[in-house]
Image (cartoon, rainbow, N blue to C red):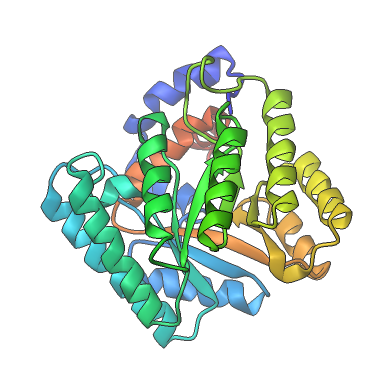
Length: 310
């Protein structure tokens, strides 16, 4: 969703690439599991011990060659094997651009199928296809619609700030019923900068769209990952859960690693299923800079810490 930005934070957002890597690494440690798969496994194991599930994301969506996409595919398969071998409560999230979507859609589909087969052979783990910015919305959903004809372990992501989301839900639900397959959707607000013509800009509009979309998913019997840190949406979701008298295995809350941990732990204490998004990989620096640009206020905290020694 759009964030109001004061001039200072706006200026800071442009200087983030020049902040020393050591500073960025220190700040990012809370939000990124680390550079290696072992780092991710340790983080997931710690989350499991606290009662949380996880979804692991291999960083590196900005690629320029199909060879990089192939390497990413193999790494995703290794993550799935490790989750299964170590008995972790977790699944995998993938970004299609990291698997070649922007370079060759057919090759990307081949890669995703390989990942899904690997996941099926290792406990039928869920593979969630993350949603990226608007140039990839239709192609991502089309691939999800195609793949769920052959796989039961694939899920999609929808963003409530996109004006098309309710229509997309209706399409997915209708097709799912015709196919006799479940619809599995993570619902989030959306973080990419999109034009007003296709995306809501006001916070209240995004929140209203989120709850309407979640209501539509629940009403249709879809499995929903309620991905939000917003108190109003968490309480709204609880109200919808009561409205539809849902059982705990019909939905889950989802949060990002290192964000609002007290709220996360409170939901777990209250008996809700909760999954934490765990990114890791060698691209930790690029990921951190992109996330800090999306949240310039956080960038302001970093510069303040540099100037004050805090």
